[in-house]
Image (cartoon, rainbow, N blue to C red; front, side, top):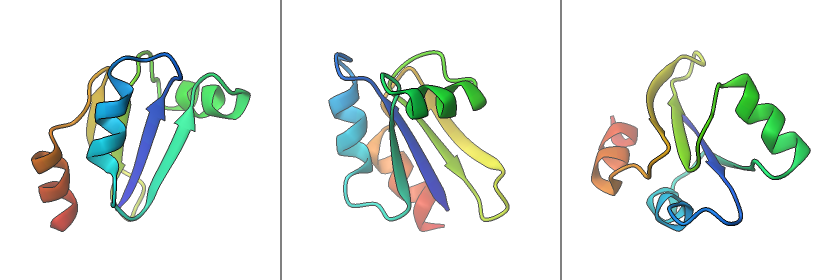
Length: 81
């Protein structure tokens, strides 16, 4: 599984999303204030931060939280399977 975390420097909800992803393997963090982060966010249709997308081994999106931090338990349970 792969996790993509999209954040922004002045986002009030982003710290909760970062905390939810803490300690997980395979997390890529993208700052949408940067050119590369904005390009990646555009590719996935990210319109709000924080956003967390989870992909399976084939690259298919299996879960996503857009504009909100994922519940820690839900995220960890999903990745444990």
